[in-house]
Image (spheres, rainbow, N blue to C red):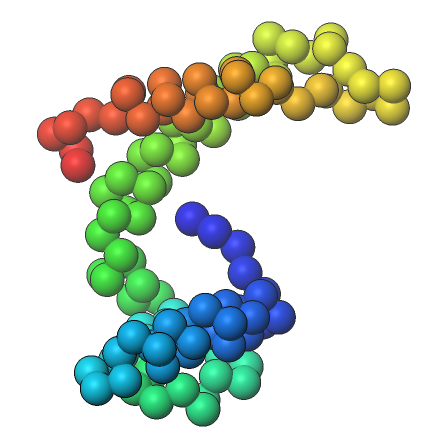
Length: 121
């Protein structure tokens, strides 16, 4: 559900992941599962116990993304589309549709979550 590049991945790896592992789990075996995105492949081979998920197989290990994330994103996208269709005349000086206020964005998220069918989760 997110976006990352190799710079951000390396910052996360060095400042959060490795620091946390070294500080808290020195005596435990650790495993980092990483998909095969190009941003993950660069400069991370020095991490012990790393496993790359084969390309095209991430969905097998990320059931929340498949069962909750996708329907949620679809519903949220529909809420944004409805907002922009209804507010297509509310433009900035440069002619771009103004973004929704924070309160409306929060309501869109809330409505998208509430509209998920528990039987689908």
